[in-house]
Image 1 (cartoon, each protein chain N blue to C red):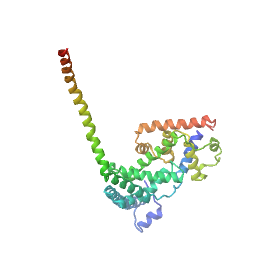
Image 2: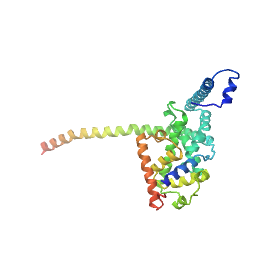
Image 3: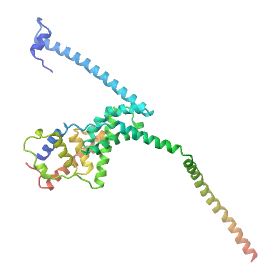
Image 4: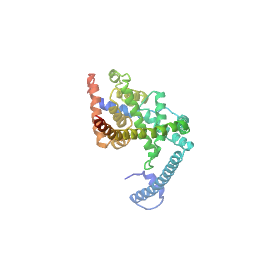
Length: 88
Length: 233
């Protein structure tokens, strides 16, 4: 098949093409340093961490409060219904 | 078995009454001993450079930017060569090379020192290049290519063609295929990787590579046939 053999021959020819020379060392190190600084800045923000910790405590506290409320209102409701019946 | 010219054989043992066959055997023995010395020397050098590379990796993990700079400088031409297959736009190409080294640093913890660092980088480079092609495909950006260009190729041997022109033509031709097909054909033909190397670079199994390779070749033929230019025998 001529197309395939032509394709293979061109591929072999293309393999000898030299790639452009690059020097990315400086930029890569700059990017990594910037990333490192960003991470460090994040760890240095006390208010951010305080807010995160508050949220972490608040969420389970609300869940527990709802559960307790539901559990406690049931018997109270029953007692109030019984009292209402006696009063009548 | 290697054969040596008679003047070479005789010059080693001048004036001796040894049969030619025996001389040849002696010469082969001498050469094989010399070769084994060179091989041992090469192996020592390779081991030393691998040890230095592993030391630089460990130092980089501890935050030594000079060590990582050394690793980049050592491998950037190899990575550049691979990514030149993925983009022929110099700016994009440079950005891709940069991305490879940033990504490599961020996942340096996963490098196990079982294989040379360059092999590990080539997997990342393939992943970065493939991701770039998928982004292009999602955006519907394909480079222009006309099959007429293919037909207009000179009738003379492709060996006469400028390598850059050949690479550019193939790059645009393969750009008409889906990223997966393009990747497999690029690695197998343009990079000249065998099945095992392609599997290592892509992270696919060898049988997967064979199947994908077959499908991609069929799609390429279909591309020629659709344009009514296929099977020019």
